Image (cartoon, rainbow, N blue to C red):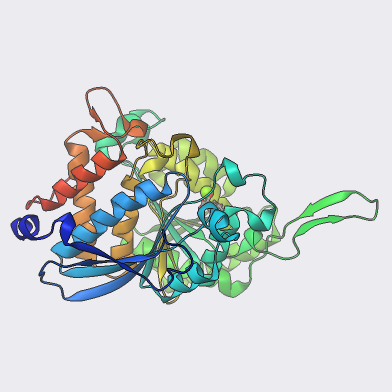
Length: 406
Ligand code: IPM
Ligand code: MG
């Protein structure tokens, strides 16, 4: 099949045709169709939201990888690229245009790059790129955010921790994504009775919100090593007391999963003291935001970590956990692997296409085994490459008939 691909699918055979939202911008939406005859059995609509900074660079690379891995498995994708974040602010004055939200909701899955940048940092809150992301997550109702953090043997030297502490780390952080202090009411900046400004946010969780994320976490742990650690601040916060009560009550439905609880301050410490103790972690929105950045450093670089955000039904949202890195944007220095691995999560969790997902994961390992490294994961003795070249190497590895093993 690889030989077939090489002779039939060239860049010339990819046609760009105008999409539905071409009135919004002539740069943004398009569909790509593969004109080559192929053993296509299934088609999927993918909404691509490149966003800002390094977003467009990593999305363009990941799109090619997704397309080729899909092709090898008989899948075809209709891509619809839509403006989002700062790019959308510049174009139409809002970070999440109605058309982008609709395209995302109507797709089979959404692949997102990154949002934000210095240019919009001083914008009013509702006109910041980050608000677009929060609203997109809420519109898609993707309450469960899966953030794996795995130390690959090839990258153990890139970890900030000692080799013996970092090696073998393989955990999954299940973060609640559309509740808690990020969305709770009341919120805002008001004036109190003394005429002084006060800023307010509310950490609030209803029982059903805790139950549904806890179920995802128990199911996740069950498919991994059967250990679930629920992280909260139940020694202080009422929302956490309820969180612990609900998670504990569900444990009897999952007798095969060993449940433990940890306060978030201790969890932050344990993550760098002895990270191998963790298998699956479940936690609220804000603790998950913080702990997943911390966990990423154990693995060597935030440039390696993908994520999947899933709801009860409807399209999932797949994005690298890194930001838009405006300092290196447009310089071909970004690590595209987190976005490529997000495309693998899209195939696995979003479309149920596990074989195509495995192809991508194996290709990434193969490229790393051959010594290719972007700057963030570079160590002497390896080959320093840019974003595009790393993408080319992953594409080449996808063609290899024998899948790589770690
Ligand atoms: C993340 C990011 C976002 C968050 C920001 C960009 C709104 O830090 O996905 O972790 O806080 O959720
Ligand atoms: Mg974050």
